[in-house]
Amino acid sequence: RKEVEQDPGPFNVPEGATVAFNCTYSNSASQSFFWYRQDCRKEPKLLMSVYSSGNEDGRFTAQLNRASQYISLLIRDSKLSDSATYLCVVNREGKLIFGQGTTLQVKP
Amino acid sequence: DGGITQSPKYLFRKEGQNVTLSCEQNLNHDAMYWYRQDPGQGLRLIYYSQIVNDFQKGDIAEGYSVSREKKESFPLTVTSAQKNPTAFYLCASSPTRQAGEQYFGPGTRLTVT
Image 1: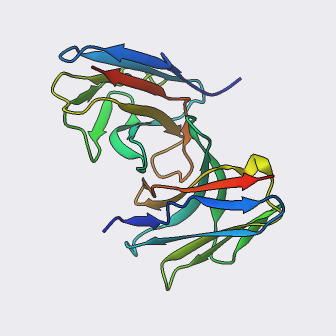
Image 2 (image 1 turned 120 degrees about the vertical axis):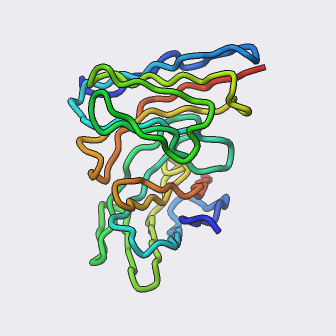
């Protein structure tokens, strides 16, 4: 079993839709959590950190449930430019563990 | 502009040849990392360095070597001992090893035939 698991998708949604991605992690020693975005054939870039209290950045909302070892990312009012792969990442003792990513394709 | 550069963007080599991938950063970060990414897979850690003249093996270090003679530079050599070297190689840095966020270079696509 992978330490960080994501549904690879792809998720195909129309513009304006709300879409949610989920991620589970298996190691309870994980200390901090992130969502990275990776465009096709490019490097990953930090989208947002994830906090237990939940945090929002514009159309993006991230949530962490430590008890269930579950992380989520909600994207509201999807744009064509949101099309990318979203990587769930956990930091365990200074080591980043990457999920395989969930691919989102937003259609006109 | 501060950032991480990797060169070249694309690299083609014949089987049996060693090849060195360049990674330079001007962010004044102590920690640097090398990852490899294969299609449909997450990033896997090859080597990391927390400070100059020190580096540690990651999860898939076999067939690779690194050096950290300068804070700004962390080159990766893919040796002929690496069984499946064709991949997308990403270099990253962070202020310290404990920092959660890492900054990535644009990557090098290595094809070995």
